[in-house]
Image (tube, rainbow, N blue to C red):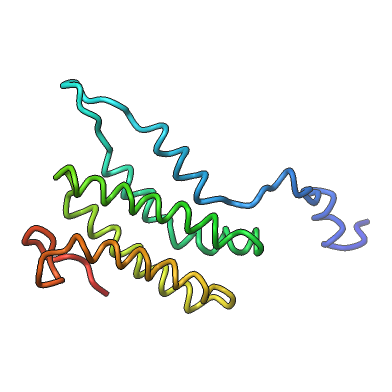
Length: 157
C-alpha cells in the first residue's frame, strides 16, 4: 500500500539535479537560431528568414520569465542579450532595405509583451530598462509620423 501521493510521485519522477535542468538562456537560443539559418540565397546574397526570426522574437516575453525565474542572478542579462541581438538583426534588415512590415510588427508586439510581463511579474521591473533601449532603437526606424514604417501602420498596443 502506498504511503502517500508525494512519495509515489517522487519515485516516479525523481528530482533533477541542476546540471540536468539548466536555466534557459535567450542569448544562447538566439545565437543558435541565427547560426542555423541558411547563409546564402541562390543568387549569392546573404539572407535572413524573417518568418523564422518572427517566431524567435515572439518568444521574448516567455524567455524573459523563464530566464529570470530559472537564473535570478543572470537571467535578465541573458534575456536582454538575446532580445537586443534580435533587434540588431531587425536594424540590419532595415539598413539593407529588406525589413518587412510583419517583422517590424512582430518586434513592436514583442516589446509590448515584454513590457507587460515586466509589470506583471514581481522582480522583473528592472527589465523594463532593456525594453526602453530596444524601443528607442526601433523608433528610429519609423517614418516621420512615428506610427508607420514605409507607409504601413505598425503594431501599437
